[in-house]
Length: 338
Image 1 (cartoon, rainbow, N blue to C red):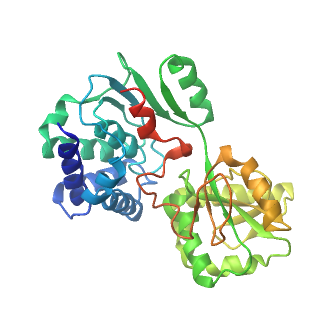
Image 2 (image 1 turned 120 degrees about the vertical axis):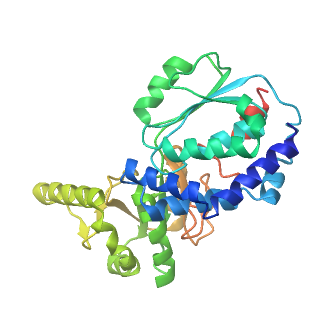
């Protein structure tokens, strides 16, 4: 296949993800039953985000700097995460668009939707059937891209460290508030916090606020998301963390569906967001740069000059094709080993 043919196939897949096709709806329901975190709204958001990114023009512009005109017989082992729906799709897209064969190990949390989408891609362009293998154990691969947590990353490094690799660890995202935000800004920030229940690496788990910030303004802005506590798994986490803080006498704020706890760490428990005060934005810049290896993105209306990508409120969960996880350009990596 030529690069153009691959682009055309993925563009057709994008249209499929945005459709109400009966097979897609069936797969979405199956995924929802398999994993309680994969609610209908979250699956819809994931399919829509991916589908919109797969327009012919966006794919063409994204791949323009790379030749990728010829296919290679080299194989990329892909170990996918499953914390949110279709989270591993971008690695599949990158490797196939670059002309590689792929061995796909899906996550036990997201085997249904990802597998269905790949089979649909093969239906659209049957030649991909020679490029894609599903496996439980990688073998005879040339490169590897593996995504997991800090513990699994150590395992991946041990077993795959001798091969060219991208190995991703835990990351979270943060938001910077100044007190000048409008109610709409805070409401949009709620999407960055609550979409996918806060399970994604682009989910905001930490708030930086100026000294003396009125937390009630934040709570008022996110009030429309109160229904999240009606999800049983989220509610269990909320109740558990609340009881821990109460028993330990830990200072925290509580609005009935989210706990805000002063803490310098970035990775907060589910249903909790950590809070840290700053005196001046200039001082905060240094703090954020020091945390760059832990942050996927920073949400703010301010034009922050920092290492980590900055996005507007409401946009953290809508990455573009060139918003690479952990700041590692996957296409550059693949092009260097083709």
